[in-house]
Length: 131
Image 1 (spheres, one colour):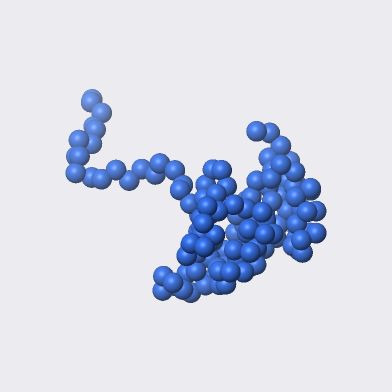
Image 2 (spheres, one colour):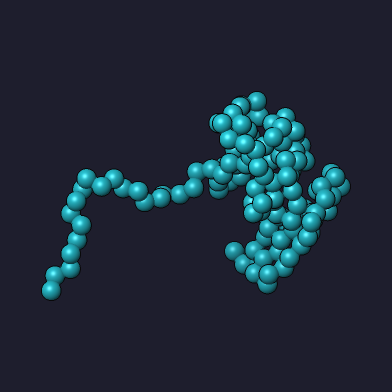
């Protein structure tokens, strides 16, 4: 018996190649920019853009006001993992800048420390033990 193959080339290719960016909803854009830029020390090529793109080395983060797209604001409740070289050290530095952490966890594979951004979005500092 011969295996059947799909020879219909009219179906568009829908395979995902990679993730280009993650959107972070914000209620107050200026407050969010200050948090990501000044508190977290993240970098954007244009902090004055309507939706600033924050470059993280592997995937970009966009600050987006959902009301500009006809949606309502609601913060993310599943944390975005922000890779740092040392979770404890990064946590201490952010605490000195006024960030309050809601918990920590060591899974045996990675270390995590949980907090929220200025808009209530869940974030975590994250570091795997093995590369």
